[in-house]
Amino acid sequence: MRRPLKRTAPGEGRVTEYTITEEEFQEISSLIYQESGIALSGGKKSMLISRLSRRLRELGLDRFHDYYRYITSDNRDEEFTRLLDLVSTNKTDFFREQKHFEFMREVILPELAETKRVRIWSAGCSSGEESYSIAMVLSDWIAHKGRWDCKILASDLSTRVLRKADDGIYELEKVKGLDPKQIRRHFLRGRGENTGQIKVKPHLRKMIAFKRINLMAEHFPIKTPLDLIFCRNVMIYFDRPTQAQLVAKFHHHLKPGGHLFIGHSESLHWVESQFRYVAPTIYRKEG
Image 1 (cartoon, helix red, strand yellow):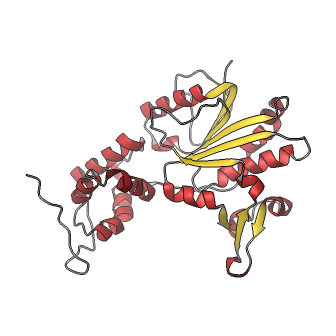
Image 2 (cartoon, helix red, strand yellow):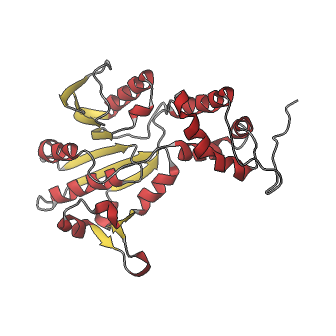
Image 3 (cartoon, rainbow, N blue to C red):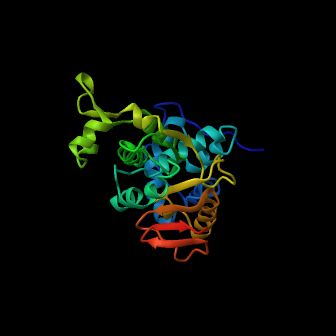
């Protein structure tokens, strides 16, 4: 018979400093890997303790094994989403890796000028800066070129960062590197109690659909072939077999001639795929 989870009432002998055994680390890290593809090395023990300790206190749990039992019980779906929110690293900026946006303007959009239709997926969009950067490029490109049909799917595993992305509100410091004219075109400045914040304008927001997608899912909710996929600084968290599976799925969802952008710390040189190398971190689906 399984023992009930040991919990402590607030203020009654609750453990304030947590440690994690190798067995406990393997339990939790294996669960994360199975469900999300994120591979945590043994060097991530301190990170796991730091990010999960508060949650254990909130639940009144004394050990990480108790937390593992809790997350694999009837609370699994909701609590696992919370776990991923806590362990995910979400750092991004507007127009990060500028050359990708230059390539988009100079190569990809001119190729689509005849149809005036573009479909883009920002996979691992974090708090939305990448997605809105894409939307700004599209908006500026089509400003004097007539009506275009532009749609961006922006996805992440973390519901926490997706909420922030959907709100489209950022600290003014976030856009300090942008051209002032670009800021005026695409953002609203906060006033009063919102001074120091900016919000994306509706013409950018309406281009984007934010959605939670687990990149380890067997099938993605994408029915239309894509022209471009941004998946930057995401695959660094996956082992090589997982990376290869994901690259194959990206290839499937791109239309012939479509492009994949990855992060500068990533490469496909070792992956057997039908992508053709175009430039560092830029690949094209042949056809």
